[in-house]
Length: 218
Image 1 (cartoon, one colour):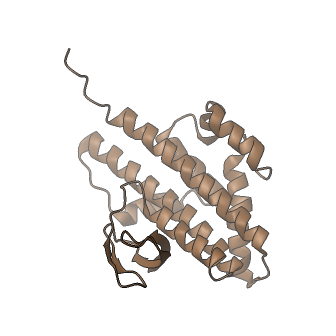
Image 2 (cartoon, rainbow, N blue to C red):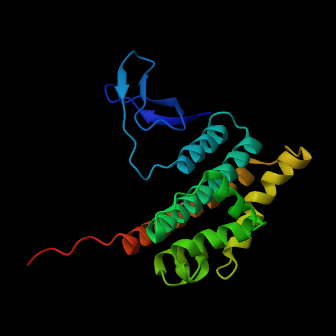
Image 3 (cartoon, rainbow, N blue to C red):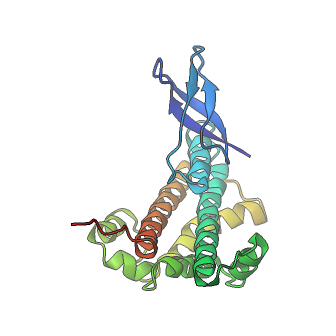
């Protein structure tokens, strides 16, 4: 699978969609003016963000709003699965050196059933207080959600994400509905982007707690 990302040329500055494979961390491409480029993605530019870039491309370049919604949900779901597998694997390794198979991780994640439960349980892997309390304790996050996302409610964020991002995706893929508007796609994209940002913050919190920096010698 490839995703299209808008990347500026280092020589002339022209910004064009560049096809990037999901596993590629160091892409090479030639801009329309013939300049060769070799870029490097930061470690936190995960597969979820790459797929979210595909959503933005479908939205802005192709005006395919239903497909943009599908990729917004895919980006969110992929990041949930990635982080669940990451921290389940790390915890097993630290506990007794066990190496979990991908199949075992997928089986455990599927046991949670609904998307909202998968979201909540993955967040609890990174912060035992859960997603809603994590947001409540951060004034910047709480304010952003209260002021910019009227369709979400702190106290039921996982359910809100499922309703606003995954229900539209399911309506497209399960029932063939393709009449979503630009505003619908923009809302799904912005909420998925918010969700990935929250997951990234939780991941950083868990990393700091699990692998604290060594104390500096005085």
